[in-house]
Amino acid sequence: MIDTAKDSKKQVERAVIIGIKHPEQLESEVDEHLDELAELVQNLSINVVGRVVAPVKNPGVEFYVGSGKAHEIVDLMKSLDADSLIFNDSLSPSQQRNWEKLSKVCVVDREEIIIDIFASRAITREAVLQVELARMKYYLPRLSKAWTHLSRQRGGAKGTRGEGETQIEVDRRMVKREIAQLTKELAEVRKQRSTTRKLRERRSIIHGAIVGYTNVGKSSLLKALSGASVLVEDKLFATLDPTTRKIKLPNNQEILLTDTVGFVRDLPHDLVEAFKSTLEEAKLADFLILVLDISSPILFEQWETTLDVLHDLGAEDKDILVVLNKIDKIDAEDEVFAIAKSRLVASNGVYISTKTGRNMDDLIKKISEIVDTKLSRVRVSLPPSRHDLMAFAHKNGAVLKEEYDELGYLHLEINIPEEYFHKFEPFILDK
Image (cartoon, rainbow, N blue to C red; front, side, top):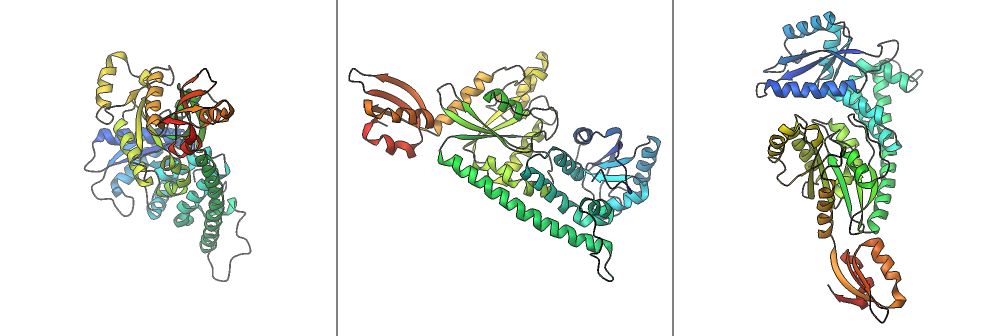
């Protein structure tokens, strides 16, 4: 972790970030990835004082880059008075150790940065457990680097070492026990979440999930649609825990919308696994709202990353409404080009600004159209004694038309899940 034991490393403040350029990559692509890494690093209050692009044809065993390039990077780091090196590609435990021996500073990779950001954002018990599990799995093969930190975190291993047993072996056993315990606790929390989901599904209310790359405006969209309080911050991974709000559509149909954790390119495998229950909101939803940032230089990568994660979750076949947010950030003269470019990934996308409210009515109309496909329309005639069914229709469907006749019968036209038809069976006029 960045903040290691006080007797081994101080909190780092100044970093040089390193991007690896593989032969098939354009330098502009590597620069965009470094821009994203810089934003990730700055979310940990670390200043980026330098950046390097290192061309690599065949990754080296010792430093990943060549030995000459490694010494060049260290010289730059010293000249900039940096106290850390941060790589955009994953380093093996041995490469990390070799870099630290050469540079005498803290050396981490993108995976560790993301884990640390997740740790700083985790609030609920489930998120805390998920992040801690990912952290332990990441550090297990790196104990020779971080054992003092782990023993400080867990109270040390004094008195637990057997004859001939090294401190690393003791800590490895300790971490494995911690992983087992965290896995057990997380299973209990997920069981509780599953119970909550079943209660929600029992109501048969239509449920949508908002998905997309981190920091594209998913939480802002949920807040704009629901009018309810939702954490909205302009930073990566501001929301780790799913937030669900009830939305009332213009036709009085009520639905649930859930804001899910943001995706990111090359999300560490252990974090994908650890956050599986959180991301399953997308898999269990009736439809998805996929949000993209139209002003982002990595728009296509946001699209591909999101689809890849949805594929991994088995949710790629859902009805997907693509929303291109932050249109307000595009200059008027560039807007036509930006929209034309975005149509390469989303031919039927809705272009909105949650900040200014632009085209939000169009978005709500599109959501209503999707919801209508999930319901069936039926006309009923209710006697005066069964007005309880009118209340049921308002709660569990959308009442499109209602009128009384001269005998006091209430004629309703409603959109409602077919599983509720039996409640109205004696009074159905036509389906």
